[in-house]
Image (cartoon, rainbow, N blue to C red; front, top):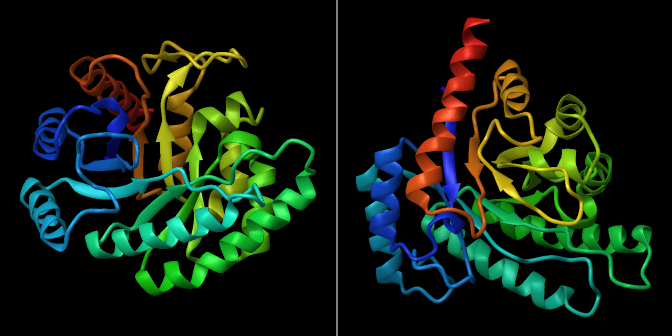
Amino acid sequence: MMNYAFVSFSCPDADLLTVLRMAQQYGYSGFEARCDCGHRHGIELDITPEQIIDIKTAFQASGVKLQCISVSCRYSNPVTVQANITETIAYIRLAQALEVPFIRIFCGYIPEGAGREETRTLIVESLRSLAASAAQAGVVLAVETHDDWSDPLEMAAIMSAVNHPSIGVVWDIMHTYRTGKTSMEEAYRILQPWIHHVHIHDGSLDPDTLVFLPIGTGDIDHKEALRILIQHKYTGFLSGEWLDWEPASLHLPREIEAMRGYEKELLTE
């Protein structure tokens, strides 16, 4: 059986104990905390040592794993890159204190007037500068296939240039297909050496408007993604990322049921 988590965008107004009860109720074994977005889970940079102990205790008691901290740090803009590096180091310290294995980060959009090559160089240099801090903390900085780097080949070029085990990839299966224009199998083949975490969500291929749809009713083939991950013995988490969508009580049980259904089908084929 695969491991499933959900991002706090599903329940931004829920406190941590409510989040953990929902995870237990619906069958999720992990949680991904989106930080600095006003979500009420309480996992933020300014928490106290006492709050860190309380958070770790709550997760341990629930049996749910705090698998990932998801942040907005990005490194493509020379004007803001140093501030983002400094913030990333702060999140590395937080992840270490909470014993969280991954921090989801972005490359960032290419600034107006800048070229892809020079922007890639800045991103690579930034990630290299962070790698030692991440390694020392036992944390992997996992860059999501997102924004101007949804093409798996573009992300692979960054990963190859950084070439450090503490820098990896969050494979968002929608972005590599919808924006990166790459099949599931090809995206996985390209990104496989660096994948640490996977984001799932279904929707349409409309390039202008992101519309979420129940898994199995949109254009993103989650069964094919599962087939590939099972075939290659992926042991990480698949984390549902649904932003400003339906109430959690509607989509959390339905989406994991759809994924478990695909698993059963695949295992009997």
